[in-house]
Image (cartoon, rainbow, N blue to C red; front, side, top):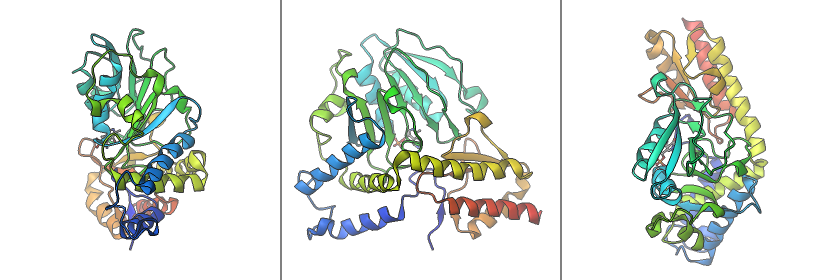
Length: 356
Ligand code: PMP
């Protein structure tokens, strides 16, 4: 039986993506060959890469606005390095918002490239909220933020307007909600939440911000080189790109980001409604910053943990324990998680209340 998969990533993908990718491993496009054994330079795969790149720009509403989409390797973690390498000047400055573990990992890497100003941090409160009311130094080469903090279950609802490039790590909420994506100059996201399997990273970059920092950038870390090579500078992660394309097609057929946002809001409202109503539970993140993707919550009395854990496991739920730095529970409700799965969890929470 298919589990209700609340894993934080890699995570649930649409069932049709699993089925179509399985089919492509056996026989890709009726070619008599597996997607795993064809050349990345073959006509069929070049078409996959082109469509995936075009669909990203279309789904984000960025057509004709000077953006390029790339499917790279190395995870979002490599973008922590590529962003400063491509954008921070020699002797320049960058500004970062420290809203969680991943933001802090990005800051650590940026410091290798130059003066890195942390404009605000919620670390002292174990990142239970998004810092607000900060000032970004006007002489920074760029500002970096993390739209959704996967571990702590917080999500930025507003983004600053600045006279400098804005870089955003959208690993755990890309394609989940409508935003004016043209406010951002560089967006990156590991595929393994809302887009596909682990192994590729989506980068969406406004071309005009590149090539201006005067650094000599190693080829594999140079966005310009990847753009010139149409995201095939070297052998790309062929299968993760293909599975990502299938997910993007699924999203488009569903009605795009606007349609999935409504479903995501309904799922989040259902679960947070129960967390707030049920006297046995409490939310871990500040209410105004709650993530629609990752809901973090705790039992008021951990003595009930054994019973609750046994109950949700028996209901076919998987991947609910929270990250070790927060404890409790984390329900990751990515795009492909059906509302019915959230209902199953809510029913278990209600059942626990009845039993106690
Ligand atoms: N940023 C965020 C917001 C993440 O959630 C993660 C991984 N969970 C990363 C970066 C790191 O991604 P990767 O493992 O692809 O390097």
